[in-house]
Structure formats: C-alpha cells, structure tokens
Length: 262
Ligand SMILES: [Zn+2]
Image (tube, rainbow, N blue to C red; front, side, top):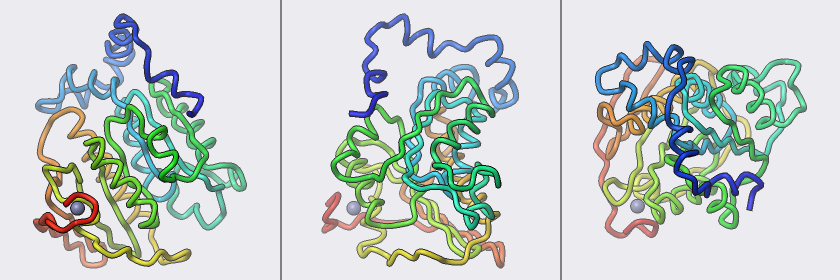
C-alpha cells in the first residue's frame, strides 16, 4: 500500500461533501469553463471529486496534467520512475533547466501545486507493474495512458477492463499522434486495437508541440467524461498527422478473440 492509500477510505460523509463543494475562490477561478454548455457548477464539483491517475509524467503526461490541474481536478496521481534529463526538455513542459537530475514526479507535484493549489497532487515514484497497479489505480475515476511502452500499457489495459475504469490511450512520434477512449465492455480495449506490442524505442524523433497537442486531447477527453459533456472517442481512434494537418477518426471494432477483453 502507498502512504496515501488511507485517504481513499475516508468514511465521513461530511468530509466528502466539503471536498466536493466549491469555495468562493474556486467558483471565481473556474468561472469561464463553468459557462460551457452542460459543464456548470455540477460538472465542476464532479471534477473536484475526481481522481485521475496519470501514468507517465513525460511528453504526454506534462500537458495532460497541466490542463487537468488548471481545470480543477481534485486529485492528480502522477506515476513515473524516471529523472529529468536535458533531452526531455523539448517536450516535457512541466520541467525547467534547474530541475535536471531531479525526480519527475516530485517536480511535477511542485509545479502543479503552484499552478493550482486547489488540486491535490500525489506523486508516486515507481514503475507500474502487475503487483502495484491495484494500489496505484485504487479509487481512480479515470486513467490516462501517457506511457511510451506497450508492456506497461497492457497492464493498465487489463486493470481498466477488470475494474471498468475508463482508460485514455495516446501515442505520439515525430509530428503524429493517436488518441482513443477505452471503456470496456462498451468499447474495444487496447489489445483489440494493437494485438501485437509495437516495439519500444528508447530514442525516437518527437516534436514538443506534437506531444503537447496529443496530451492536451487526452485532458479534453478526461474533462468531457468526468463532467458529462460532449462525446468522447469511445470506439474510435483519432489519428493526427501534424506534417499535413490531416486529422482522421476511424471506427474501431472489438476483437471477439481478444485475450484481454474477449
Ligand atoms: Zn480487447
């Protein structure tokens, strides 16, 4: 169990209600987004009550976390094992030159708290494994896959299927990206889309604006689902090519023989 696990089971209804009701400062802060049709105070309270697990605090996790914190998500749990290197800084916009060699999640916690002190950030410096995923994702409203390898992605996918927690997949390389909203049994799962693991690459070309765009789309999907507005990419795969600015959304189908969800 992680030290914050005790926070998940606060039984007092009063405390829960206090957490969800918005202070005057919060009402002022979120005024512009609460004007969005269907969002309102109720949607904002849902955001405050939500816990989002962000798996990976890199090129996708940085913009996703920034926009979710700015929007007032109550709890952001950031999970990443790595430290900050100079080569991260073209795209991992949570970090600055002075942060090099520090742990990503520690810096992410500081930066996001500075951005929005109303958001509680739970930094978890760990790799995601089959052993710790249930502790990591305990009480999560939604999971963001901001990872760079399919082995760990499939751990998230299987857990999301078992617990019926939505998972927002994204991948990015060069100036191209993919986004999909996975919510079995209503939608195909990650393994339906990618039956075979794509090989992981340690160094691949990537533009910061591309990971920024795709990570921001993940945040949009999470905000829509939590507040209940609009339509998500459930059952669809968004494919964006930044070199031509072509964006296509295709229907994806369940694989009845999928080893994960079939
Ligand atoms: Zn599947």
